[in-house]
Image (cartoon, rainbow, N blue to C red; front, top):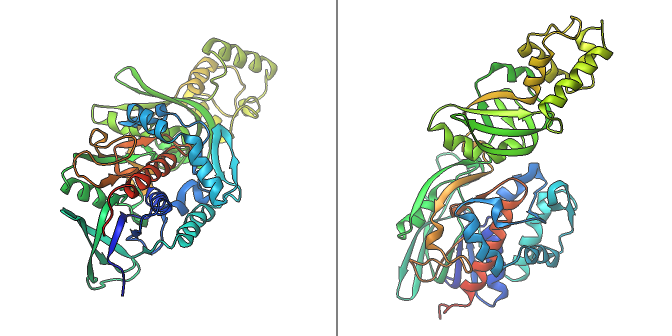
Length: 424
């Protein structure tokens, strides 16, 4: 007969839930993990285009937004980032460092990150019940009653309601994740559970998400990828800046630098027009770049602009910049070079929105950090409840920071949940 009573029940088998389960079981607690997807760690398999940028060597509180920086000073004191990397070393995961301190599995396969976690849970004999969704968490004198129901796989249409069960727990780790990637299980249901337990929950919005822009010329640039210095502007003020890769698409722009600005862009849209300005020659001052173009034009005197343009930047982008500057692609280089210089130093696009949760790496918003202990991830409102990962109102930039927070919060929550009074 299936066991019903556990020291710790974990709602959610994403990154933070799996880390919490390992930490709690290693500390000697009996642990049960409940997961609504058909496989644990489903989102992990999609991160980093299937390569899983699972952490970063340069994690700092300043890499996070919302309640992050002040909150995470205490968190990273309780569990320094290097100890998270050692945790994965101990699981047998070989890692590779890429640009910006980004850490990937050496195999460059997300399945290996998922695999070492599940192998450890198997070795610790921790049951993970998939296709099992937590419906309610009710505190009582003995701890918690966790109501869950079996769910049909998404590929089974019009399936009847599944069997419901009640699991008893001394402590509960709520690791249900956020609303990003609803096509693979993301939702706001975890926020609903947290809110019903008396926690303050702010509205969710997409973060680290590609942006839509107004200008139709981006369709001609679809697939162009290059580095740039980006500035987000509204009302004559610079709201945020980032450097790195930008990817043009048929709908707008993506790439790491754009994703890092997306949260601020969407927030600013509520107040009026927002523009994204790309400087493709950030290593030149405006004056030096104008002088460079004039000297290049002299070297290409009498030859068509297309000769002048070859070797500067991607041809599609140079064609677009020439059109914006009023330059004939086949005419001699020379006229309107100052306008061209300004265009390439300030390639301006009006942001109109985003691709939404469907294409967002994470969701912003969620449970208030003021109601969570930063060193243990214990709720300050419900004794015995722990809240982790994307369910909290903390989100970081691209580069492995969000997964690092998930591992950190899960490990701390699991350790401390196991240290409390268990169900007898």
